[in-house]
Image 1 (tube, helix red, strand yellow):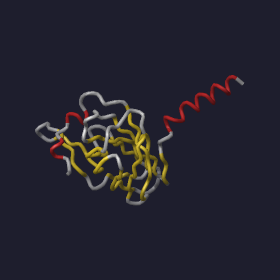
Image 2 (cartoon, one colour):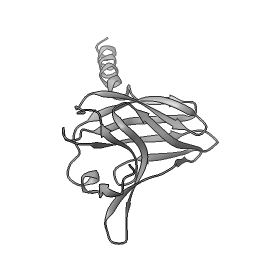
Image 3 (cartoon, rainbow, N blue to C red):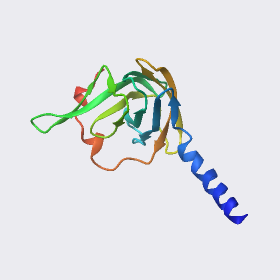
Length: 161
């Protein structure tokens, strides 16, 4: 009996950590999160993994959220001069049977013109828009602040307006 109670307690405590993963058809969106930006920040990056377990490719073509004036799919790139920039991309290809990680230094969601401070532990709704899967409602979890490096070192002058 004590083993069953221990197992149930473990499952109960683990459930909130996975509660914001979303499955929509063949797509699974894993841990959509935003590292807590500084209270004065005007922009923030959103990250997640997208698993396509289907036999057909799909594409992430957009994002909507009320936490910012504008939300876009972006890619971080480092030029030949070693300077990192972020650029808006029209879509992210999601190959059949593959996983795409939206992470620091690569593809990510850019929230520009934040409507207020984002506090660690909060959950914020957003809609991912896929070419085939359509609109998928998710929640971004505000994670602990990111350390030095990552998006703080990027040249924001190249961001779309």
